[in-house]
Length: 301
Image (cartoon, rainbow, N blue to C red; front, side, top):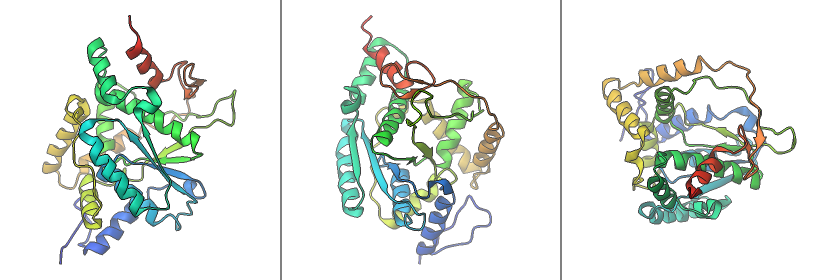
């Protein structure tokens, strides 16, 4: 019989496969805020292990969490190296979760460009954006749009412990403040227009544990890597984190980085918000980050 344990928990006992699955699922469920109860939610599914594991847990326990409906949001960047596997993933989701509404949207349907086109425009114009910056900003914008369109109150992201740690390090390198302001996402001019809230139930779960969960549950994932990943600083940070994990198998440094980050979260500063001049999405600038990038890429000057 296979034996599993959590190397990131010094008090973890050894589990059989079924008990390990329950253990991981309980860790995820603890990070689902109670305010989600009674609200429709969506899971942003990329096809990787993290988002598919999250979808499986939320789907399995939707009744216990009193979630009235779960939708699946899939954004297709239209990268040839990934597209075929994503189609297979889409078939798997329809088969395994037949009662879930799946909203599959291409980048070109939203922005008139697919991601390879946008990356090529950026490289030709020498604007200096990394592909991951372009994709990340457009993805966030598109998810909010889908949430508003389909009446979703919360969007669940497959952000893991390593992902959140990498973001913290990335923000430090870029000189971005660690403070997270308490901000309203509501427009004064349109009090009924409100952005869905994002939740991260996997944020205290390591990728190593997610790998085991996916394997035990026999959930197929997209194995192809994004061809642009190596161009991002986040990729270097992720490699750095992987090396540190070999020296600190319990991952104490991951939690320490996050604890340092969250010491700077208590602030009530308000930032003014506007409807974006181009897409009308709530933004802290007159042109939201997504439309700013698109405008610069389209600028022929």
